[in-house]
Length: 149
Length: 149
Image (cartoon, rainbow over all chains, first blue to last red):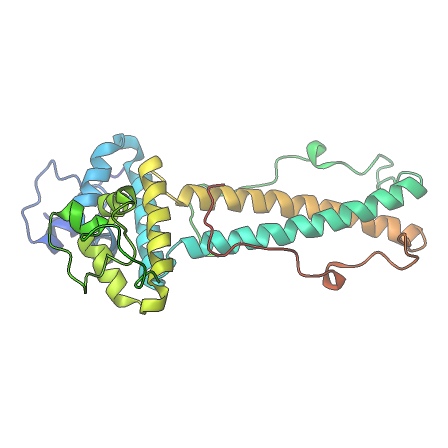
């Protein structure tokens, strides 16, 4: 939420582009600052200002920042790749996941053969090598950063 | 490309919804059949007919079917989840990939310890267990099916 940040200009980036007066109740103003004109230009080009406004009105205020971020990501992806947009990223991730699943299945099959024929292996501290469930949570997985992969 | 398929009606789903005359050169007609009204309704609601038309005009004719499929997927995702849209699927896939990478690293670390302390394991045919590179390609990975994950 950026509602309380000072605005760099009296008009937000959306109202500037749409050449209209920016009112205090402008739905775009908190999310499209006048010093970031490209962000609005992109979502406007892909979704249209009217649809963006409808979507923002549909979601609770505290989720509008996230909504604008995801719309901006999608718009950017569609402008880069007009055929697949961000579906290209999904297809790539699905392929990589299948590759990882195959690698993991192979590694586990080999482990199963080793553990059937050998005593358990101890780690440096003399205890069993931990399973995934025993490990601490696997670090920071950003939920807000939508990276191109 | 569905250009040569017979149309179920004289107007495509887009022209029906937009209440306009469907001409033989209609950009929507090959991809939005009159018996699939929801497909166009969804992309229209999220992207707007004008933006969809602009995107279709931008891509080569042989890629328009794919383009419409990816737009329909994105629109469907945004209508289901107005905050994240298909970015929700990307974030979930990224989290699952991190989990798989951790699992694989653990399995490989255990394997490295076993193989340092044991002779290589033979498979049922008396040969070494194949590495991933030795396996045949890992099955069908659909490039056109965009599934929710």
